[in-house]
Image (cartoon, rainbow, N blue to C red; front, top):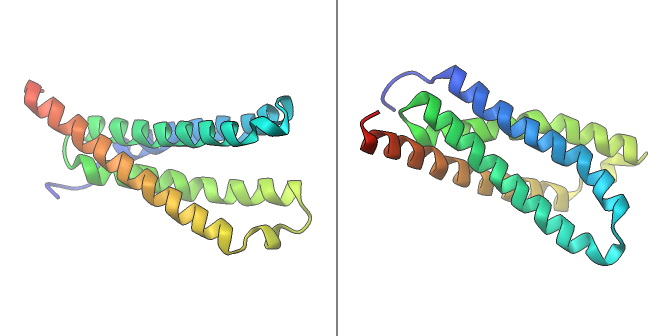
Length: 139
């Protein structure tokens, strides 16, 4: 680490990720209502891709603003966004089902942990690339 964390970069990166995640979270309920059951797998895959793009965007934004320690700022921005979205997910599950605790079984936590780890890696790579590209341009 070459200096203190740039909190503005973390807030901007996490804010971007949370905004995309909220749109996706509430929009997915609408989209799943529009398509037939045969399209659920494809729609779920598209939502994963959008989630990955949100992580990449948050890492790139955090790395760009910080202009140093891109992987750290990118990964932290993604982690902050994931932790901010967790209570929102709990509330959405609680509203959708009276038995929210059965939905929070091992499968939920494994899925959450794995996709959070993938998001952290993607955001760290994006943060690294943005900082290195800026450095190569002399910015």
